[in-house]
Image (tube, rainbow, N blue to C red; front, top):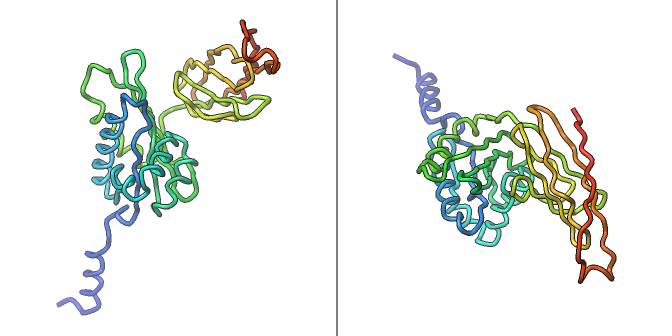
Length: 249
């Protein structure tokens, strides 16, 4: 017959939470243009359902909005795949981890980026990107299928793109997706990427195509020329600015 102490130990072991069950994860809706908002939220809800199967307690996008309120939830969504921003905006939820990202449609495919962040420190714990043909019905399924790898710390092979301007605060768009304001550091898939930079009161820098190597870092420094105040309302033409591209490592 097992002793009383052994029985007590067995009962405590049976009542212990499964691995990860004591961890709370908030899943934000994917940041998307108006015509893709519903699809972005549906894909995020599918991800949340799949995450629960990993033994994690989950706040779905609907619950996130309910607890934060619509305005604050929208600010969280706008963080897209910026890990530090996600952690700051998710702070009122009191969760341990947060997943966010963005959804775009370009050249016949849906492009999805997801990031897994530590909600307390803002550290990036993992990230994935997916491309799904528009004609298929795989978007929700593919996003949900990425849950196991992403929550396990999975990170797609990427390079780092850095955009710096002499005057900070310039808007940066990478491959048609807003990437924030300078200085910008963004993980991207290895390969060729289009970078556009603009700043009010300055002529836009010419679009630049940059080759980012796997595991490497490339820094570009677009030159933004200030438009004289007297010329701003009726500026007829634009000069082409130069851009310095430097492979850091």
